[in-house]
Image (tube, rainbow, N blue to C red):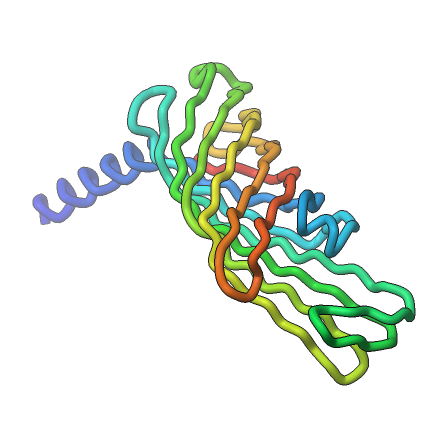
Length: 196
C-alpha cells in the first residue's frame, strides 16, 4: 500500500511538472484572403478554428504543432463564367477550405510576466480544396501545398492555468499540385484561450 501511495504522489508531481511545460491554445479564427485566394473569394471568413500546442524547451523557447481550418465562401451574381474552354451561365457559389498542419517554433519575449508577447514560425503542409457550384455542376480543385506561417501574438494570464490568447497569423501555401496550381494565402486573427 505504501508503494502505491508513493507512486501515485510521484505520478501527480510528474504530471504537474509536465503541465507547466505545456501550452495548449484554442482560438476562433477570422481570416482575410490574399493573392489568388482573394481573386477567387474576396470576402472575410468568419468560419475558422485553430489549435496550437507548445512544449516549453527553455524558459522562452517552445516547440509544437498547429492545426486549423478556415472556410471561405462567396456567392457571385448570375453571369457567364469561362474556365479554360468551358462557359456556363448562372449564379456561382464559391467555397475554399484550407487546413494547415504545421510544426512550430515559438519565442516568448517575457515568459515570466502575466502578459507574454510571442513570435512563432510554422512549417508544414496545407490542404486546400476549392469548389465552384453552379446550377447542377461542381468544379472541385485540390492541392497539398508546402506552407509557411509566421505569427505574432500575446497571451495574458487570467489564472495559473488559463490565459487569454490573441494572435495574427499569415498563412502562405506555396504553388503545388496539378489541379490548384496557384499559391493560397490569407491573414488570420485568432482570439481564444490558452491552457497551461
